[in-house]
Image 1 (cartoon, rainbow, N blue to C red):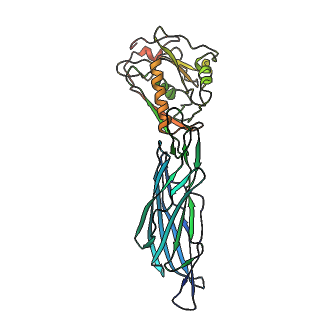
Image 2: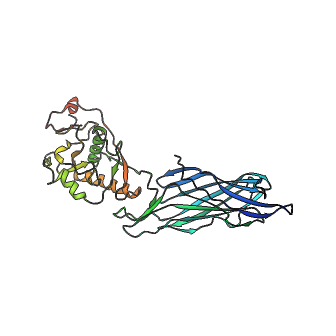
Image 3: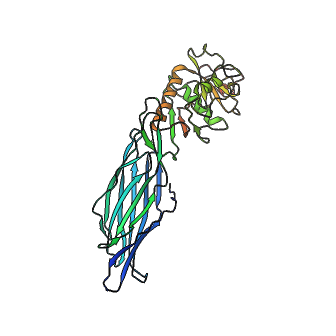
Length: 375
């Protein structure tokens, strides 16, 4: 993916001794190409930022030009708040009186972040076809519950050999923010991510013992209109989880969750959209009700249940308690692994072994029917 940052231009002017005693020369540089940016949840990079240095005589005529191509890239960590960024500068063009340049580079970042190593190199002499490379480093320590979003910024200081510079810099900012936080919750530690890249979480079944809840969520995502987590993003909400659980599965529902302990000894209500999301918490009376079952080595795509109305916008499923706990553990791991904090939107996909070999009656179950085996 490529994005275009806001226009960033800065000029420098230098005075150099000319070959003719009556002439004076001035140099200026600015960013003539904003670069191509690429972002992932835990990385960012930019290539092709062109910094052009132009040397002019006392009449304003160009007598030399040099072009420096800048690339930077960094990998963030979901479990650390320090990271390094690789910086590369190559001189791709030189003409006239400009045969070499001195290119210094400095990195910084906004409040909430500190550039702990600001310069990738110290000797910045460069000639046509040559490359300068090095790293800069950043740190954004966080306390429990805290979060900071900021831009990383860059400045190039470019001069001709022997020139006296008055304002020799061209500067620009990263097109997107980095966020470091300690706000995922649970046992998660602090880490950093690119918040504008939507995280993608995944959950999967594990045989017949722990797949019921995930299979139910998959059915809901494939069959209900909203296709929560796939076509429509979900939004994490760390407050009100108990209230949303009660509205769908507990005393807050206008229609109680029916008991199916005769079929599932530890019968538990698994709801989708999840109670951990803002989209969860619909009245249980408005939900499709289903009983996922395992047969012939897989979870049938069309699960049996007492009400499989796909026009509904939520599901409550009868699953064993261990199944719901297994799914909840995967969700918590996904939040930590992708650094999903409160109010973050995310995508959610499910994987389950689907079994298509079952009796036809299971696909056309009458109201109130419950599956037994394969039909």
